[in-house]
Structure formats: C-alpha cells, structure tokens
Image (tube, rainbow, N blue to C red):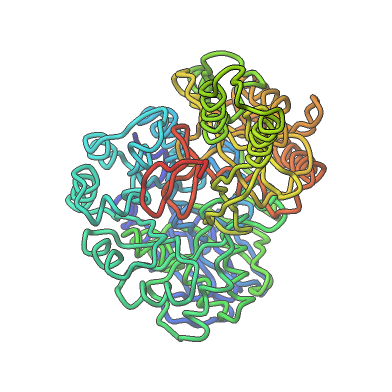
Length: 635
C-alpha cells in the first residue's frame, strides 16, 4: 500500500536546496507572517516561507525565491503555525468514513493523524484495517495507522467479530504508513507476559516503530512493569498525580480532550503547576463526535483548551506538533516550519482561538475560512462492509426479561415445604393451618425484591463505578426501576448470529421512558440496548439490525432519533453536514427520554468496554474489570 503523489525528502532535496539558494524559484511563497517556531519557542515577525515540491525550501526573507510563476500568499501579519498532529484517535468515533473525517479535520487545521482503527478491526479484522488504511493513503490529510493490538480487547470475556494474532501485526507493520502498534489495552496481559501481547510488542520494537499504550490503573508496580515491557505512552491519564508519575518515568503523556473524555483541565496541571518539561507531552483527541468537529474543532480545540488552562500558546502548539512528530519518529517530515519538512502550514489570526483562516497541506491550500477548497477522491467500501449486523433471529420483548434466580429458588423452597405437609392432618387446627398459609404468603411478599449489581456511569469519563440496587421482582422477572434511575441493559452478539445475549443493569442516564441502542459498543461492537421497557428495547435492536447498524432512540413504539451507520455498523456513508444533523436529532431524542448527560451516546457506547474499571457488560455477561472476571448480576 503506497501513499499517492507525496514526495519523499530524498527525492526533492536537490530542488529544495536550489530554491533556498535562489538558483530556482519557489512554487509558493507565504509572505509577512509571524512564525511560531516550535524549536526555539519564539514568535518571529515578518517571516516568509518558500515552498517547492510540497516541502519547505526556505524560511526568512524569501524575495530571492520568487519568480514570475511563483504564487505569493500574503499572510498579512497572521501567525504561521505548523500543521497540527493528533497522536491518538479513532476515526470510527467520528461516525464518518476516513474521507469525510479528513475534510472536517483539515478545515480545522489538522494535517496529520495517527489513527487506531481497532473499532473496525473488532468487526472485520485485518480486512477492515486494510480498508481504512488504504482509504487514508489517498487523502490530502496524512493518515498514519497504529496497527490494532487487542482484538478482542478482553479475550475470554467477550466475543468480537474477528481476532488478530501476532502474525497479523507483523504483516501490518510492514505497510507503508503504519507508524506503530495501537493502544495496548490488555495491560494485565502485558505485565504478566501474555505470549500474544509480548509477541506484538516485540514485533513492533524489532520493526523500529512506536508502541502506544492504554493504562487506566493506579498500581505503581504495574505501571513500571508496563513501561519496562516496551509500551511508551498513555492517554488514559485522568489526574495530575498520574500524569506526573508518567512524566517522571519517561512515558509520553498523552493529554486527552474529546467529546466526552475531557482531561485537559486536570492533567495539564502537570505543566501549569508542577512545571514539568513538556517535550514528552502530547495533546490528543481519542474520540470526537461530528458535532464537536463542527462546533469546537479537532486537535485545535485541544490546543485551545490547554491555552485556556494557562499554557502559553507556543508551548501548547509544541504539544500538538513537534512533540507528536518526535514520538512517532516523523520529525524529518512533520511538526515544524523548517527547511525540508512537508509544507503543512496554518495561517491563524489569533493564537488564543486557534482557528485557521487558511490550511496548507503539502504546499497546496486545501481549506480557507473553514471550507475545503480542493477535490477529494472517492473511496468505496465493499458490499461486505455493509452486512455486519447478524442476529440469530428478530428479537422479542421476552428476550429482555431477566429471571431472578433468587426468587425462583425461594418459590421452589416454598413449594417443597407445602408438598411436605400432610394432606388434611387431623392434628392441624384451622387456626394453625391459617397461620402457616399466612407465613408462606408473607415470605413470598417479603422477597418481592432482589439485590443486583449496577453499572454506574461517570459523566465525562471513560470509567464506570460498581454499585448495587434493590429492584422489584414481578412474576419472577427482575424489573428496572426508573425512580431509582436503574435501567435494563442488554448486550447481544451481532457478528456471527450466535444468539448470545446477556442482561444487566445500568444507572446514571436518568431515562424516564423508551429505549436506546447502538452497534457502536467499544470494543467488540456487539449490539448494545438499554431501556425502561422490553418492547421498546426489542424495537430499537431490530431497527438497527434492519439498517445495518448505528444508534437509535425510541419511545412508545416509535423512532425518535436514528443515525444509520452501515459501514461495519460503525460509520455513516453520508457527508459530514448530514451526519451532524442526524446526531443532533439523536441527542434531542435522548433528552426527550429524560437524559441530561453530556454526550450520552458516547458514554453509552463505552459501557461494554471490559478493559477500563470498574464494571462493564459484554455479550457473555457482567464483567468485573478489577478482577477481569465475569460476575453475577444478582447478589
């Protein structure tokens, strides 16, 4: 797989040298800008940049590089900022294909991303990774892939649509444009020398590429074992103390700010209060929804958030440019405005706001005033990609009934007790018989509730908390309880049509009616359904199966909001603007159901991720992530 048209430095270095010397003329010269120099930390006024063959030839006063055919762009006092790099993100989380995401990201000033397509890998394996990687190689946005490491994310606890082995990773690391290994989520496997994890990391190190991490734990011994195993970054850091520990150990601290996971405010204190050196700190998005892209931006929004928290603009820009390039061994080409590097340059009026008025990628103006001004190629996913939701049969309301084992055992015991009493015993007085009958009835009445474990969400966090609730039991079926904010939750295997289904309970979404469902259910992406009643849950699940996947909200038998995502059940095939409108409609539908939570469907999609503490659901059952074992719903 080869990147289209982009020239390597060794292919054009002679031309660049001639332009720098004035022996040849530049194709484009940007004049009179204020250079953001990420090497020296300076703002250098009245700077020109001469560009040829898609790369930077000269930085300074560049009149000698201007010829009759040179295009001259007056920066008019604007800042010249290196194109921004996102060091960890999942394109699938934007709900769009790589092409549609690239349009949105470029317009906001992102010129390169390091994507981890482990979402599609969990559905279609190596084949799905190849589709997205191939799509990314033909775009103006530089799309580097970190090859997915944990598919499935938690073996033995869930069932994904595919499985990747060490041999797959070894082959994928040889593809042009693969920069390293995707986030290594199975951190217990890493520290306890799981052969698969050990083999993947060793293969990446042998290939001279980067091993990216995922460590949502406070265990200091495990952290050092994790780093010693070869993993070099972490984006799951959520506290200042965790961040400082990683910086001290030489780990690349990735500070995340996405649509739901907003860690800059707390973790950036490592810089603003602890005054840690920033050369090994990068800014990333991880998961961003389409409306965030439109309304707030992409990695430029994360830079802006860092500035708002007290980081100097130049330092914040360094953390999204040169630091990222160095981490992935791409400094020769990316991360700064200096001779030899790709001519990826933003023209920005106000560094505090970080909104580019023009975006240049490989020496071509690709966006102006937030609009793409160049044509994009079309990539067609195969028909197979649109047939990923496979249920054993249409679901029925009764499929979502969780029978109480405790109530059943009590009924059995009561029945056995009744059977053991002599029929018509002469010694039993009428009064005694009445008392016994009343006692059984009272016992049955007293056991009309049961205690269950509940997954409690934490708003704006990828983590959950374990909890318990006392729920009513009706006709032997454990009931959700809207008054306690405890909803029925289901995870249904959707890749091979096995019919596997698990039931549990969730709290924190505050739904008052209806049901919601999603085939975006990190990381195995089975069919996730949650609701207040069985009928709406069945409707939501079946509707998603019919349209090939997506996200839906229903109430009283009617659809309130729907985002169809037929590509692997993860991505829409529609343009950004249309996806944004559908997502806004879905957001309104969640609110109509009573949910006040920020980015609720993103939080919902992570409730099935059994690699981040504390409690999760998979298609196999309720998972205790503190022990990495399945656990009973009913206590």
